[in-house]
Image (tube, rainbow, N blue to C red; front, side, top):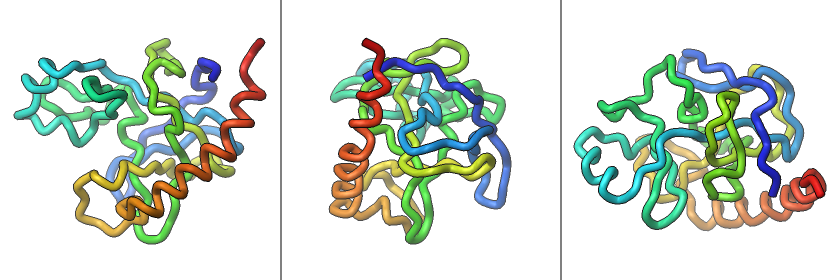
Length: 174
């Protein structure tokens, strides 16, 4: 996999769903939409911060570490430089338009040069369209989403990997 920089900043905006992220340009299947960045926390740091409720925003990268975009209070300020932390899940029957595919830290860099987890477009995304991603079947939610159905998300993720992997391999520099 190639390490790529985000080529067009995402925009954080307030809409009826709260804070949302939209991309500034059109994305095609396989395009890097953004890089989920934050502080890499191990088990000790996570335990010390647990009382803040920060875990609603973390991105697990392995069994012991997470990417944490929150401040000391466990919140993501709306003026944050970690805008991909505001990417929402789709609601209802809608499928997400992004996937992290490779759940590995360091495969991309944000516009500030910080390493993170890449979010790729799984279909064409129009400029200004809200970016969405599944948080995973185990995420605690109070709304209806197809992302809560583990069998469906498993099949969907497998399909996205089959579609995206050849595109990403073709883009890898020799």
